[in-house]
Structures are given as C-alpha cells and as structure tokens.
Length: 176
Image (cartoon, rainbow, N blue to C red):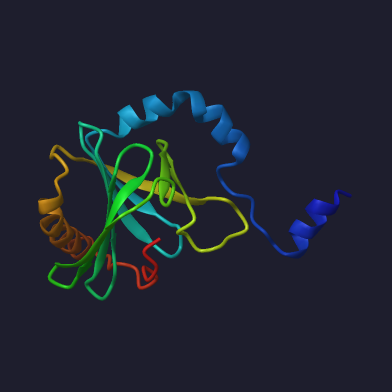
C-alpha cells in the first residue's frame, strides 16, 4: 500500500476538488475564464474563514472582492485579474476604518468558471499552498468598480443577504 495514501486515510485528509494537475490543464485558458467573469458578480462559498463572499468583475477588468462580517463590518479588496492591490476595512454603517496598499503576491486569485483559487502569505497557514472558493452563483454586474461606491455596495450586499435568508458568516473574522 502507498504510505502517503495510508497517512491520508489515517488523518482523514480530504482530496481537494481542484487539484494541481487540473489547474495546470486549465492554465492555457485563464484569459478565457477572466473574459467569462467580466460583467459578473460571483457569489462564492468558502474558504471557511470567509464563508459566503462576493467577487465583482467589471467590463474593464477591475476586480472587487467583498467579505461581509456578521457584526456589520466588511473587508473590500480592489485589484485586477491576478489579485488585490488594496485592502479596505469598513466598520458598521459602512464606515471606512482603514485602508492599505498590498504588495504584489500578498493576496492572489485565479478565476475559473467553477472555483476561485486564493493564495498568498496573508492567508492562515494550511497544509495546501492555496484555498478554494466554490462559485455558488453568478449574477450580472453592469457597473464600473469605483472606490467611492464601495460603501453603497456593502450596504446593498447586507440587504441582499437579508432578503435571501442568509446572514454574513460569523467565521469572517480573518481578512485573508
């Protein structure tokens, strides 16, 4: 018997639904996946510390990732098809509490049509070099992403989750 398989069974380590091999196979189509995502709001479930969260991609290729917290706070990450370049932390209201530019590689994402792959040193330590978010739904997004419209977007997301019987995850305690 394969010793690694035995260790996997002993520790009940689940196989990731998107393997390294599958990512390599998909790599030549990354531009097509990103074009598919443009003009969409992606409702994403997982990684566990974020629960449900939303990724918006406008038609110009700007990306906005918003993670709502049950306490009324939120994190917003602005970037492009490769990852975030800026993080904003909002308190209840929403009120901007802090913002900082992020160095390249701190929070990266790869957008597919079924998963978002997150990676970077800002994430909690894990056995795998990346985290997966499963795309649960896609909705149209016709707006242009602008920093000044983020508080309004956060308020509308809180309302959307309320009307759809969902509350932001209490596990959204870690910004990354």
